[in-house]
Image (cartoon, rainbow, N blue to C red; front, side):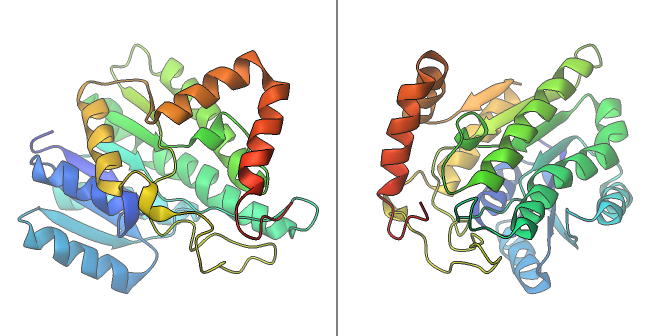
Length: 267
């Protein structure tokens, strides 16, 4: 990855920032995006303080034109795009019966259409460089999670898109990776939308027991270098995917019971 130009959406915090640091310390040139200008500026300062060649660009992945401008700016700054990491994402926590449908639309706009827009904007350059397209999906993209209908739907859609894209690009030399972290310590759950579209503020899970964003980033970096197609990161995740294929009815009960243990579970 030395001297490769890596574009990371949602790169100002959490897994995105950890990815910027991981690729950057291995010699990549880093181009990160984010919606919050202050967070973005601070992330770039932090990266540069670690001697990483980094550039920030304020953009909202759910806006198609922002993604076009992002790709143009990356090419203007670095002359090429080698790797696109579709990391920007948002989650929600509410029962489907209670949720306002605008919440699900917002989640889909960011988690799914954001990937569509950014990938389409960068694709020609990545085909030229025979580079990589990476989507940060989730186990929720293989096994639906109650209370997170919009999130699971967006990640299922993402898995299908990446699989199709991988097949379309099979003979163009482009690497497509579907990365599925398990529960990872980040600010994602604190910013999860409730039924009204407001941030819930506190994580309903014990963040201290989860995989760190840094470990998650290291695994994604290695999978990019080795050009893996699918990366399911945790033993629990691999078991969930397998058992859901073999015994979906039984898994419905197990998943329901597990998620219902969360404080203030919405179902």
